[in-house]
Image (cartoon, rainbow, N blue to C red; front, side, top):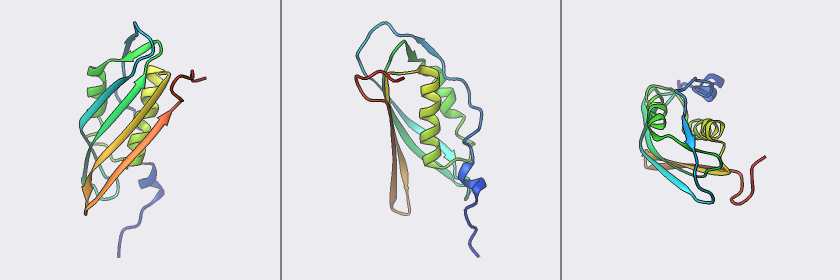
Length: 133
C-alpha cells in the first residue's frame, strides 16, 4: 500500500524559523540585482530523500540590499529541512520580502529532475516601476 500525502506533508517546513536575512543601506536607485544560488538542497517531507536545485532571485532594491553572507547561512538551513519545492520557493521569497522590503522581486526555483521530470517554480512580488504598498 502506497503512503499517501497528508496535511502534515503539505505544510512541512513552512513555519520553520530560519537564520535571519541581513540587509545594508542601498545607495542608488532604479537598478536590478540578480542573485543565483546554485547549491540549494532540502529533504522531501514525504520520501525523506534529498531535493536539489538552484534559485535565481532578482529584485529592485528600495532602502536596503540583501547581505549575501546571511543569505548563504539562510539557504544552508534548508539542507536538513523537510519542505516541498513549492513551499521552499514561496517561503524564501516571503522571508526575503520581509527583510529587504524591495520595490519588486522575482524568484525562480529550478529543481533537479526526478524520474525525467523537471520542476520550475516562479513567483513575483510587486510590479517593476510601481512602489509596493
